[in-house]
Length: 343
Image 1: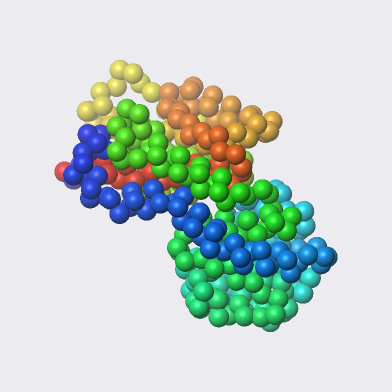
Image 2: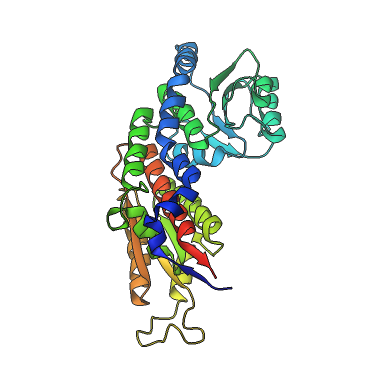
């Protein structure tokens, strides 16, 4: 069975209607962030008020399997020691001087509930973003516990709620949930299925991805996190290889690629073999190491005739830039899935 990409499907209303639920879910990402941040506002205000005048915590522990996003945001910024701890237990040293934060957008999971219960038992300060009356919420009951209510089951929305709190207590960077939601709305508008592929960046990126095995790279910590999530979305959408990683790990893949033969017959045996494509996520980071790594990867790709595409964002904050890149890549992955046809 052969698989090929039919770009006309990306503007076919009947085909787009088949994926209406998935596209609508992407389009409503900004609304979910705005709604969750508004609903948790009172709980955040109360939690911030409780910490007024209290000494700064000794360390911050992000517990649970969804801790990696918090790590990407907080690790370069947090003014106290920070550790992401995805296992069901806590570090042996965690205690009453430490803050344990947990994202549990689904509100269930034995591992997450166990970590929360352990934090409460040890007397840690605990802040959990989860649905009210959920399994995790029940395990979080304690004198020093705060529940930031979320209901959308959206990891990004729950993370923004938590980061808003950490921003308010000077343990995280500026978040501005409204700015994040606005940046997501801008992506949803520019990548809307109603926009023709000629002026739709996500549809154009899907076309570029169609005949390739993508290599996705982001220079900053958050752009690298977005790269991993986008590569995962592409793999789910296409069933093909999509790599994401540090420049030192991706460079050998590019260097091992044979230079493009412009005279090769794409219809001969082996002529239609998928080649890599370098997708660069540019969130505006201009540190010297980021510029150097980006230049090395782009030069290696150019030397071997590997196509290079770039996703950019001018969102106002680090979190908003991460969200914008991730949503743009998610739209492209969904359009890639729509365009692939098996015969």
